[in-house]
Structures are given as C-alpha cells and as structure tokens.
Amino acid sequence: MTQRKHIRSIRNAAVVGVSTALLGVGAPVTASATSVGGPAPLAWSTCEGTGLDPRQQCATLDVPMDYADPGGPRIEMAVSRIPAEKPDARRGALLLIPGGPGGSSLNDPSKKGQKLPQDVRDRHDLIGFAPRGLAPSTPVDCGLEYGDLALSKLRPWPAPDGSVDANMATARRMADACARNGGELIKHLSTADEARDIDRLRAALGEQKISAWGVSYGTYVGAVYAQLFPHRTDRIVLDSNDDPDPARVSRGWLAGHEQGVEDTFPEFAAWAARPGNPDRVARRAAEVRPLFLRLAARLDREPIPWPGANPAELNGNVLRQTMLDSLYSPDTFPTLARLMRAAERGTVPPAPPSPPEDALQNVAAVGAGVLCGDVGWPGSAASYEKDVAVSRAAYPLTAGMPRNAMLCAAWPYPPREAPVRITGRGPSNVLLVQNERDVATPLTGARKLREAFGRRAVMVTVNSTGHDAYLANGNACGDATVSRFLSTGQRPDSDVYCR
Image (cartoon, rainbow, N blue to C red):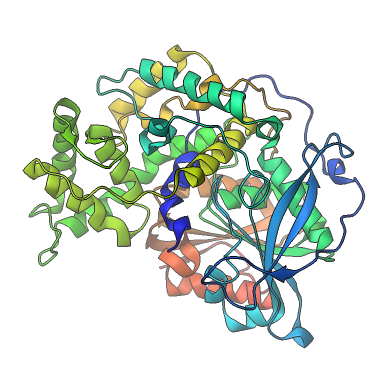
C-alpha cells in the first residue's frame, strides 16, 4: 500500500489506547446540533496525488469547528468521489468510513472501493473523506517528541515489572505538548462531531439518505451516525466492530486486545510450527507461546540495539508490540516469526520503514484528540496499577498493556459531551460483519454492538482470522452476504454464521 499502509499501525495504536471511568461530561449529544443551515453544493475538481483512478474527483466542505457555536470558526473537510458507473441506475451515495481515529478514506474510492461488486459501483457514488483534523482537511498537530511517536509510547506498555510510573510521566509530557501545540481544534475532535460532519457531507451531496461501509473504528462512527441521524441512513455495513460501551468507549477497545490476542495467537502458533514454513519457529504449535514469552522476558532483561528503529532497541515490549501488529492479518504473521528468529540469534532485521514525521504527528494528534475527547480517563496511577496487575496475571501475552494508561490519563480538556449510547431506535437497516478471530476488534465486543442495536441489526459471523472481514480477511460466504445487501438491500432475516 501507500503511505497509508505505513501509518496503519500508528492508527491502530491510537484506536486502542484508552483507560477507565468517566470524568465530568456535558449535556447529551443531540442531532439538533447540526441544524445550522444547509451547506453549499460541493465544487468537484481533479484530485491531487498519484496512483488514483482518473475518475476520482475531490472537493472541500466547510463545517463548524464547534457545533455548539455554528456561527464561529470554520474548518475544512477534504472529500472525494467516484460517481456511479451507471447513472441511469443510480441509487445514491456509499460513504467509506475509515478506521482510526487517524485513518482517511480519501483515496478509498480509487482503492478498496474498486473491490466492491460491479452492481454496487454501478448504483452508488463512492465517497471518501479525511476526518476533521487529518490532512488535507484542516490539520492538527501536537508537536510530540520524536521518541513519543513510537508505537510503544502511543499505545504504552508497562515496565517489565508492571510499573506504570514511566507511562504516567510520558502521558503528562505528551498531553502537555498537545495542549501547547494543538490549538483550538484539538478540543473539537470527537466521534460525535465526525458524525455531524458526515451529515453535513450528506446534505452537501444532495442526498436525503446515505449508505455507508465503516471499518474498525469506522464502525463506531457509523453506529453513532445511525443513532444521531437514524432516518438519514440507507444501507449500513459495519465491518470489524467496536464495543460501543458508553461508560468506557475507547478504553474498552484497548481492553479488548486481551481477548483478541487470545483468540488469534493460536492461529499464528499453528502457522509458525507448520512443516515446510520457511519462517517456522518451533516444531509443535504448543511450543510457540512459551517461546514467545521466554523471548519477551529475555529482551526485557537484555535488549538488543536496533539502529534506525524507534525506539533504537529490540526490547520485550517492542517484541510484544510487533506481535500485536502482526496478528492483524495472516499475511503479516511472517513479520513476527522473523523477529522471533532474529531475537533467538541475538540479532535484529533491518529497521522497519517509517512514514514522514509530519504524517506521524498528524495521525497521533487526531488519535489523541478523539480518544481523549470522547470519554474521560482516570488520572490516578493507582487505578491503572491495579488493572495492569490483574491483566498481566490473566493475559501474559499482552503483559498489562490493554489496561494501561496512555496520554488521555493526563488530558487537560474534559469531554465536551457524554458519549452516545447506541440503541435499537431507528430503521432496521444495519448489517454487522465480524471475523471470529480478530485481534483488534474481538467477537466479544462485536456482540455488544449487535446487542445494543437490537432489532435494527443482524450480524454475519465469519469463521476466519484477521482484522477487516469484508473483501479482506473474511471468507466467500461473508463477502457474498454483505455484497448482496449493498447491491439489493436483501439482508438475512436473522444472525448467520459463515463457516
């Protein structure tokens, strides 16, 4: 993939880095916040950049920075489209909602959108966008120290002894940088505001209703949009689903990695012990887990210098972070296996490539603003220490990280409003698709979203491994069920299992 592939792991780090109870929150979110006068029609022009479908067009939409002050400052939102390929059969617009926070779908009409069935592309404009704060929309930047852009800082791991003191110090340093450098916009990054931006985009497109395909964090965005604007929704597909628990929001997503790793690691172990595999690490699958734990513990004690990497050493937490990233797809299993083989020899592979620092800074700032702006985090080290200790004992592979503090523990701005509670109120037009073994958005969390939607949704559970199910890491049965819904509106009468 492009630079977006390189920042994917940073984006995932942002998505799943959060911690416990709500602090003070404001008034409940209401759809009326967007009643600020209709946006002007979009002025489409040729997109900048390379490798794009020549049919893709781009435009800029102005939206309020603060929906509580619609007459105040405005920010720009970059949007894109490829028009329906058969105008006389056109049904409407299909919005591609990216993961993150910190992901963009601006190029997706030219990329993943082209994997959609022909009849979907014939009948729908494919719409992408860069969410608020993310370039080339009006950007935000925290000006973090370069070392704090490491994945193990953005999604921090406890010290080898379980201490979180260093994590709390890092949280204060990073939050202070965001307060100094993030400007007013850093205070106005939230899932609810992204949903409001989407409704402004719908109106600017001239659509009474909009369909959507949301992936990963985009499932929560799609769910919030469907809750705030239920009668503006047409066909909604939510793929690789976040737990919508309004008491924890992103803290719950981070905690979900405990189960996600337990669900997925056995698949890696079986692959990593398979005869004939050039990246084989053990003779039997049962040997892979203890080998990983031994290597991580040894690297905790004796890190190996890793020139060009950030941080510049292979330590136990870097190995654990690589494990987490590599379990996102079976295609990336070799990355972990090769690092384990190198660590056994006391060596390191070439340092992984890194995107430009300005891209890392922008993605990290958007992730921080949304995760910390959606819900309050506890500020006491003691609460994290307790949770980390429990997590380390029950889930040694993740070593307490899913219950740890990130920069939200020191975030200076309380949430501006309460998180949206997803309910069954609204039309029954939502289809969830979910792999059984998903390290980032485990099946347990997806079931919580299915339960919250009630009669509005049905869920397709796919017997497959990896994050992103539809047209990616799922199976033919799941793909066909989703494609049929997007193409015809035909949806299973009840939840289904795709073996």
